[in-house]
Image 1 (tube, rainbow, N blue to C red):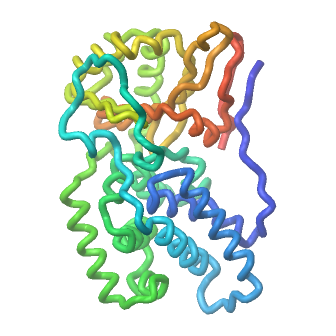
Image 2: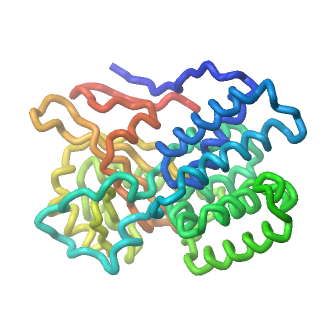
Image 3: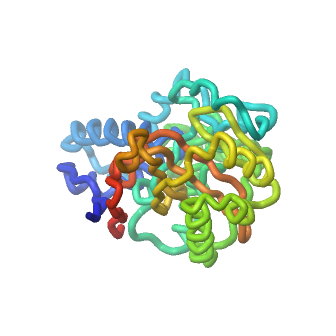
Length: 337
């Protein structure tokens, strides 16, 4: 039997619906959470729906929606700590073999992944799409979380969405000089936390080929073959736990130790955070099929994998429209688009 992932329908006013995906992408960059971004967009749509009859058209509908979404995000960020990944919270890597992962850290601590289809436009100029993909990479989203919320908004609007300083000033009810100053400070902060550079857009097919080799090695649980696809100083982490590991040797030791429970898994490649990854189902404890286990996001630098972030959170599977349980003989694929 084959299960095909499908999109979700909505009854929103078409004038609002056409902006929903780009707003979700904006809110995701602001909040660092796909779940929170969806909540923010829902609230934006509710406010817009209630005020649509009173919208006076002094700005474009798109600008008006971004103003609402920005205010929603800024409110949601009040009093919150910044989201991060384990290596941002721990001074150094963990030993390669531990007694256990320990206790999970409370929800809201970690930057969450986002399916490309949820936060990137289905149709866009290729050059713009390159910028948008780079701006949802995990490393970039993590770096954004170090910025104060208003600086974060300015940087995203100016550098990712390419709004003019005047447009951003109007949205934030401030001056152009203030926007330019905030952008300068945001750029300086981001420069102190440089994001490893992926290769340019033509390498995406190469990335898919690399993922295919990685997935094949993972399903065979051939760790020797798998770590050959990693950079020597590659990292691996596993939210919601603090554990993170650096180096091919230690990653191999972990995978053959506590990680060996992942042997005999089923996986499905996905497009996530502007890069490649896969969802994983582990053999069910009762032996009856496979249960959802993790979403793995791979950062590719050059022709090897620089990091693997394994999110052990099965709620993330809903973004890809895939089931939480597979029967032993069940095939699965993701619908196009």
